[in-house]
Image 1 (cartoon, rainbow, N blue to C red):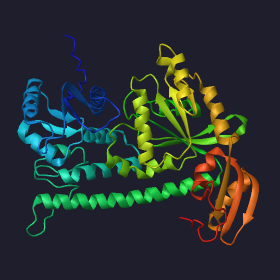
Image 2: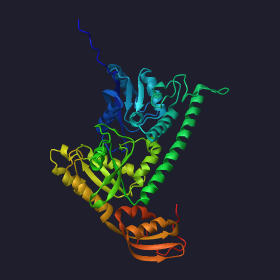
Image 3: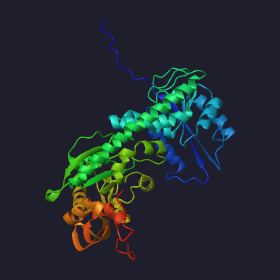
Image 4: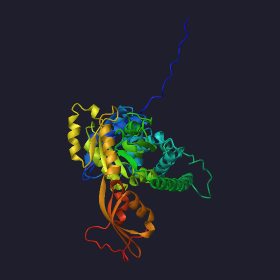
Length: 454
């Protein structure tokens, strides 16, 4: 009798029911329906199976349950009918909202929000020690105000957190009169302080590396864009490397830097950064400050856009808003309209190029348009010079040397506290000189108003 072979099985996915609320007066880049579609993709990436959705439009959120009482009852019935184990709100819920919703719907169904799902995805995809530190900090800061004895479902997200009567991070000793909850909160605060200290060391190390790169005179380029726009595929194409690529949201999280050879013997350092998304959690933006500074300090940004996506222009707006939030909107940008191979009419992408100051249409997968991109990169980084007039204090000797070495000095005047320099510099360097730039109509002499070095 032949032996039976056992095939390995994967555990069933948890069943998730989605809730989207449109609050009057709150502006978002995607419609309610499109935002729920994106949330469904996020849940799928996090390992959840979406079994249904519910929407509501309202003037203001209910202070207790976020959605109206009638919708709560409807949601409870729908969750029971669909055998949902998790309810995920597309909106960010307060700790009170989550507690009250779980109380009304029942203990067997967990209530999460979009932020919790994104944090969970980041925890799965962070592989370097730096990425894990950043994600863990964001998780703990999200977790702390929600810490109660009954919130066992957050334990997985906070990396071995609090159980019904357990402790956080292995700390379980109580002082006189302390409840277990107080011990847990104190342990989480201690862990947050520790993580912040570690990330400050990371931040200082990244700053030293950036200074070394600037001294090497090799320009730095940061790839930015909405998640799943094709940044990693493009960097693989440009650098002939093999960074992990997958057709899912936040497939790559840890920043990767590669040296790219341009024609004429020129070189540049390209960094792939975390993808953006609408409603990006503020805890993540704060925790990833060290990584996001790579964007703000770059000489040039390549904004990769999935031009085949139906909400491409809305995603562009979301990226611009995030760049402004992290104070990187001053860096020069080349817009890359990617995935033209997916379009039924590729000429549509080429006409869309006209809507951006500097853009090129490409397919990172097939290589179409890469030659045009490389030419634009060389021109922008090395051949385009911008006129500038600056008043530099002597403490900024590195910038004075940079102007002499890479720029074209047309006028030079030394003063008591600094030097006035006028001429032309490579366009990629303008952002570095901006704090000391003399605008039309301003006095050129330094006197007492020379800006001091930071």
